[in-house]
Image: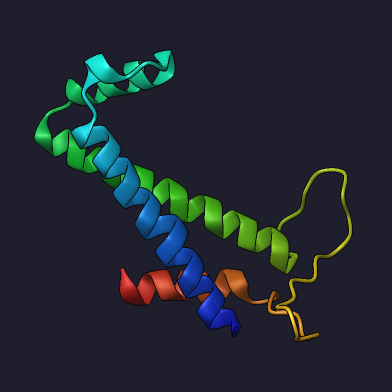
Length: 116
């Protein structure tokens, strides 16, 4: 697996699939069938949005997901830090001793820019 394969896989799995799952959950879940108080509140909030605001809501969720993945890639690359930890991470693919991290953030942001 190359760095590019990894960031595309993460993009598809985390960004696209998660956005699709949330879309289905918010648009297809009946509030009366929800049992979790947080989820009922979230569904109630969503149901009160206009169609335009619902579209904006999903754009926000997608952007938040992109920002979170980008931040994690920044940590893995050593561009960002975790408080109290000053070491570096080495992300390896099984069977290959060459780390694939170091440029994940730049590759990911470039992929987003070129494909979204």
